[in-house]
Length: 169
Image 1 (cartoon, helix red, strand yellow):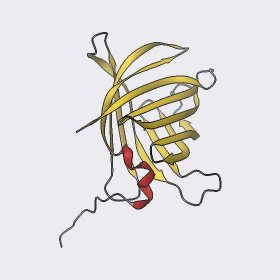
Image 2 (cartoon, rainbow, N blue to C red; image 1 turned 90 degrees about the vertical axis):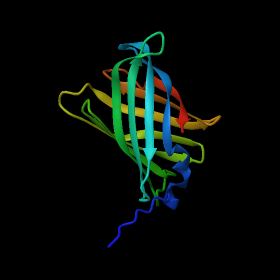
Image 3 (cartoon, rainbow, N blue to C red; image 1 turned 120 degrees about the vertical axis):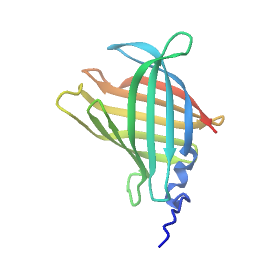
Image 4 (cartoon, rainbow, N blue to C red; image 1 turned 180 degrees about the vertical axis):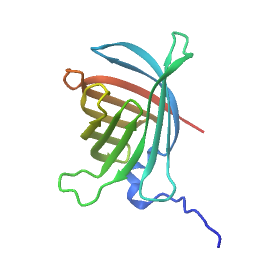
């Protein structure tokens, strides 16, 4: 028996199709409890023909010359289409972080924009307090632009991170 893998994108993923690929670039992260710094990022968004996209992101601190200094955040997860929602939600993003967080986002995907809010956040007993987030992804001038607002460590929901990534061929 020969196994063949169908790698065509599932039709329910059409609003998210623009995310597929490898992206790299830089951004800024800051919060009232930390100093703002520049970071580099690589995202790989892939699929294997099933009804989800795989998401792998890694970031690292950049020095003033744009050189990598040390690793920062890592997240891995899955984009999934949602059907039958009565509130307009048509996608979800499930993310796990090695710092002890698991997030579930729900939101709306359009052909060049995805807006999501946390529907649930779980954290391990030794993880920092983190209660909610809002993410916005956009396909702007062939680049992946994204921003994240966060509520954590006693702070209300506010700007935390933003980046501009270019598709890597």
